[in-house]
Structure formats: C-alpha cells, structure tokens
Image (tube, rainbow, N blue to C red; front, side, top):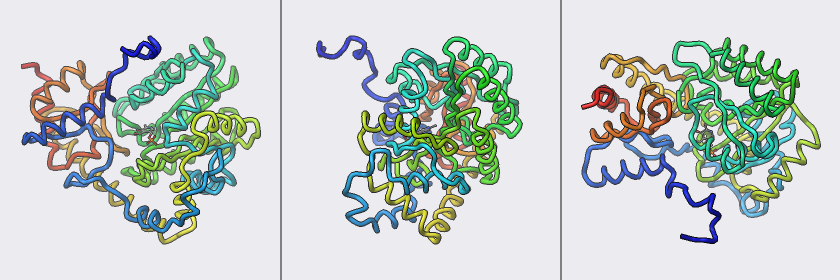
Length: 405
Ligand SMILES: Cc1ncc(COP(=O)(O)O)c(C=O)c1O
C-alpha cells in the first residue's frame, strides 16, 4: 500500500471496466475460442480491422513541420476552432468563446469546473456513457439523471421538469450534458417534439437561474439520416441564438475523423462572444494541459480549406454510416426473430438492449462467447465492432441468457 496516496484514492479498479471486458474477449479469442466481441468502442470493418478514414490520413501525411512542432495557442488555434465549429454549424460567424481540448473528454471536464461549484450536481440523461461518472467524480461534482426516452416513447417531461426544478432549487444553477443526436449508448436521437419540449423546460428553468446546455457531439457523422442530424443542429442553434440558455458543444475529432489517438476536440459556445467566458476557458486550459496538440488542429484547418477532401470525407462517412445501418438492421431482424423488441438505431456506434439484471445477463452471455458491456439499464452493444452476420448469434445468446439456466 502506498501510504503517500490519499486514502480517498485507494479503491479504484485497476482497469477501466470496458477496456477490461474487451481485453478478456480478446484473450479468449487468442486462446482459440469463437468470440463475438461487442464491447469495442471504435469502428471496425467486417474483418475486424480498425477503420481509418483515408482522406484524413492523406491530409495528415501532408502536414509540414511548422504545422506539427510549435506550441499551439493556449486556447487553441482560432482557425481550428472556427473550422471545427463550422463543421457543425456552417453559418455561425465565429466560434464564440471557445478553446481546444484533448478530445470531447477534455471539453466535458473543463465544463464542470466552470459551470458548477464543487459538490453540486451535473444533470444528464440515463443511460449515459459511463466515463461521465468518472469525469464528475474527478472534478468533485455529483451526477443526477433524467431518463432518455425508450424506443417509440416520448420524453418523460414530468421527470425532466422535476429533475431541473430540484437542481435549480438545491444549487441555483444547472449544467446539462446532452449527448443528442446519435446518443451513446441507445443509438437513438431525441425526436423534434422531444427536443422542443426539453428546450421549453430549459427556457423555463433559465428564468430562475443560470442554465448551461452542453451538447456532447461524438458520433454525428455516423447516422442513418444526415438530414435528421442537420435538423437537430438547427434546433440547438435556434436555442443558442436566443441567448437565455447558454448553449455550448463538446466537439471531438476522435470518431468523426477516426483520429482517436490524436486527442483533439474543443469546447465552444458559438452564440456567446464574451471576454470573461473566454478568459475562464483559457485559464482552465493553462491550468490543466497548457496547450493541446498542434498537428490535429492544423489538419482540421487544412480540411476546411480543401473542398475535394471534404467531398471525399463525406463519401467515406456515408459509406460507414451505411455499414452501421446494415448491422443495426440485421440486429433488429435477429432480435425480432428471437421474440424480442427491435432497437431502432438512428446513429452512433452503439445500441442498448434494456434488460433487468444486466451484470448477470452479461455474464451468462460471456459463457456463450458473446461479450457486451453491462450498464445499469441494460447491455451496451457495439455495432461498430460486430458484423451483420453475427447478429443471429448475438440474439440467440441474449435470449438464452434472459432465461436463467
Ligand atoms: C458520448 C461520448 N462523449 C464523449 C466521448 C469522448 O471521446 P473523446 O474524448 O475521444 O473525444 C465519447 C467517446 O467514446 C463518447 O462516447
């Protein structure tokens, strides 16, 4: 026992639970077993190889020494910030108050330190990407949830209104992380009606205290219907432009450019150009990582300047969205064939099967060589890492696991 380590820092798991499950699946496969590994969180092709977008790698190889080696400005290259924000909202005049961050994770982390006091609670939808809990804990805040709608159901406005009211009453301010559209882990997006309802609740809450809506965009380029994604972005743009609710976004190139390891993203408030907010973000950067990597920022700037590269990239995104869509359709068909409900994927890398006792069901499936990630609400299934042809095996193993042997 390292006595120097604070007592409050001694009880963590040795490995991230998702990475640990993935490692076990891989070890069993290496041992000769037939394994269906749906724990993976990166996009794999049908032969199990990591998908790397060619357009992006071509741009990467063109980067010059001066686009790679110097420090980037502390808050990030302004050209990068503008280009990344405009990939989402092409018409915004500027990136507003913004800073570069190491991926979306960095943006989420510094939002906690700037919009909540220690000990207060962040609000998000459940189920959620499990590192949200770690990010909250590491930044000294608690995590409150309201339910993400189940497939085919509307947003539970009563629960959301109650959650918002309780937090506003308890702490006088609200920070909501919303991973919409293309939600991880359900693979579904809010409907336009749900989104309008939520906007109404946030506007109402904003009459009683400061409300920040932070949109966590990780998977928008991988969607069944890009038009629905564009409509969602337009709705959020309208809410941000009103100015009552502070609307910002956690942006990342991990998935969108398959540059997971480049650790690049941004926290941006495109409709708030305020020096005090900008100074607070810059201060957080300086006090956490000083500057982010220059090379991926330079790449995003190059991409914004090269129309041909943008066309190629969107063709690649369309291709992989169709692959994911095909995998999701195969899974729905297999689920229905086994007497279970379809999951209705709309975008992102995952779907979530609602089950009771997820840990037990997950363990029983592992006995059949099928690996998923247990969440409190069900099983996270990585469409990004499985083949359409594996869907029947998955559904059969799930059906067997739902009936304890
Ligand atoms: C919902 C969600 N938000 C944020 C992230 C952050 O990713 P990164 O820090 O690599 O940008 C992820 C990554 O898996 C995610 O799934």
